[in-house]
Length: 161
Figure 1 (spheres, rainbow, N blue to C red):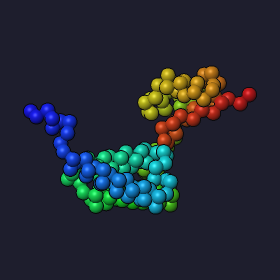
Figure 2: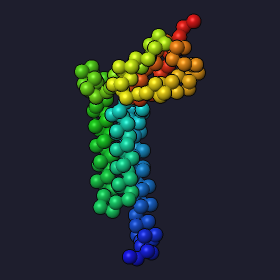
Figure 3: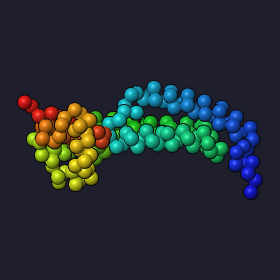
Figure 4: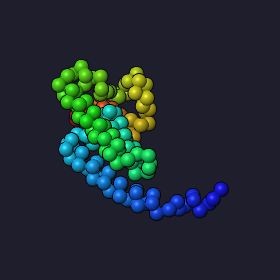
């Protein structure tokens, strides 16, 4: 085994990574500007998948010589176009929106855990309690509601005095 190849394989690969990387990054920024803020919004699981796929595609363009810039830019554009189409259809069809997005789940109500919902969502009491404390409440009994939002965040509504 040639140990030197593990650390340095020549300037050609480095120059390609720099040139293609700058151009691929510029394409991604341009496509994101055209598509709008919604493309990278943290709204639901589908948005997360698109964001991760964009990062993975950019990585492939940068590091795999078998993926040319034109092919990679097409993949980036396709992902952004699909995201646009899904959000376009979601806004116009409640049925399609329900298919693509998860609904919020009530984890606690009037100071009591909703254990069935927590089981369905695979959320522990400790996780809910931690979110409650992070929002400044003392415990579940100090809340009106705790909601697992579509984007995975936990919202806490304090008990009215």
